[in-house]
Image (tube, rainbow, N blue to C red; front, top):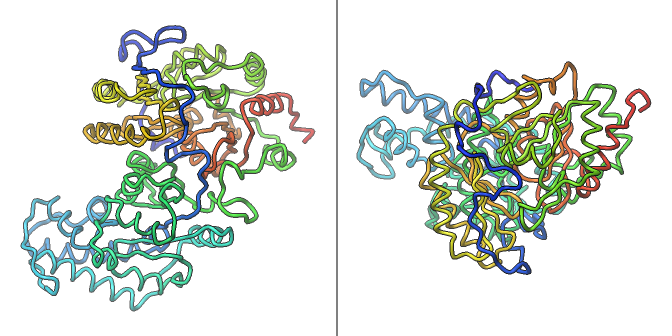
Length: 560
């Protein structure tokens, strides 16, 4: 079961006190729609359905190689000695490492840490060995790390090695980049030097004048050396600055690696700063049995693996979680017209008579509740921020109210800035904002994303995320659909004794749940594009979802 003690505390909160008048199905949505030609191109974003991932760029430290402890120890020895000499009692900590020096060039790391302690030092010169300059401290750290490197073989993360081998076998180009000037030595020690089609390290960046993370320069140059455009290249990173660089470079997909044992805080930080999906195990990105990267179009279909699915379901009771748009309802040009078919509603109702069911949607709670129209199931609106169900269940994260003013301000700024963009549609939801661009001309999509990035950059409580023909502005909080599923499993009948959690979804926000349930549940994704996914099986479309829901409702586990 998920470690729910780490989830943010939830408190009862009345919906109307936070939002004022409720927006419900059938009423006019709070949006700024500028109608465009409905036959305009629907392509032009990084999530273009037709773009296939042709290359993957790995960060080195923390993703491929397990050198974090050696780097941390070298930094700690250096800074603790310096701080002691300065009469400072507070030592260098793990948080200092992650916040100031992880993933950045050595001397920038020194500058960042000293600034965090309000300490000023002269720059010195590149050959300085004193402990009284920026260069001197950086060189002391580098000497300590090189001493470690000369005495140890660099360990490689097994999951990264497996993914790397799987990508190579599938003919996908692979590159590696690092801010470290020791990168080539590290790769040689780890026995990985021969595996990459392109390598970019700190020495290359210095010689070519490329800016360090969070600027995307090094990543873009690595993709160019692979002969690929950023729109067909995925980036795998474990550091916040790295995912920021991937997002700034508009790469096809930015994959976060969470190796921290911190109750999910790092996972949420990676998502908030640009990762499209986050995993603790890179093997989850591989198709079972070999076959390369697991993408939506290549996921095994349920009906082709029905015996296998049946076996994995076993005889345990089930808890079923369903997304709405793209899962229960087809994706449509106008999100206001997304309706659930009566046959699907009936199938969900029959399933709910047998198993506990929840619908988790990016739509407002009242909206999705009205559209599904079933009283005896649980609903989680606003990507899990707003939960309600039978028996008076009404819950929201206790931090929720603090995001309303920033969201209101950002929504007004977006309406003003996008007022001249034909086809753009700003939907203000209770705890998020959606900017729909399905009817926007291809040439304008990048402009829209630039505007969103500028506005979100002015609000430190907000973050941008991507979806199917939509950009979403979310609260920068330790909460998402995955957190909501964890909470529901821990606090409601959905988490019955020994129950198996199933999740059916289609979009990037559903990957938050796929990651959470990757070891404990079963996840099913709707096909639709060629992006990488953490789901286990695929269904073709919303009609196929209904067929599967019917099958689950009628399945007799004892006859499997």
